Image 1 (cartoon, rainbow, N blue to C red):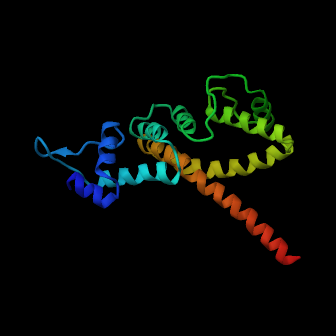
Image 2 (image 1 turned 45 degrees about the vertical axis):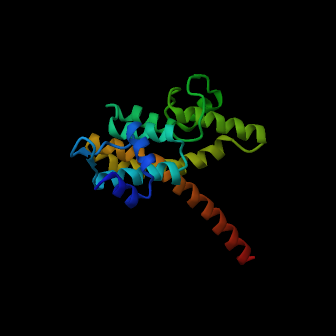
Image 3 (image 1 turned 90 degrees about the horizontal axis):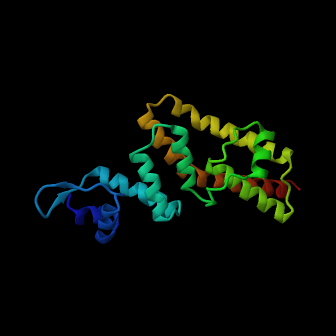
Length: 203
């Protein structure tokens, strides 16, 4: 299909398509003449992915580009790739600090792996600092409750990845991290709502 058809089928303006191509977010079409290129279903799939990250997930285009780069050219170390993917997701925090006292203490208490360079450590530090400032409970017992629940979720997510070849596992893990988090948050909020409604109705 021509770029005009790609635009029509995807709902993305031609100018935006050309921007995505210039920025390396969308592969170039197959040149069929000096002034014309052909685009295929893989381009539509890529545009759906960009829309999922930018429109549904609400990521800035610079972060979308980071995630797409990881999908297209992952580093050999899955842990490093996942760390980079986490860094492309909100909340955005300083990544060049190596002092995370609250997070370190919590991670050690929970028996998790502490790696000062992994973005989620800094994210946890900021989250714990916010709880502290708000006077909310961040006791080991509370954190253990959250950690145990999240570990079960993480284990079920990691299980299928272990059986995949690396070139499939990394994109799956990166995109799963980016796109399942809003679903998890929504399900948590729905559970809160359901429990409150049922408690009210039972009373």
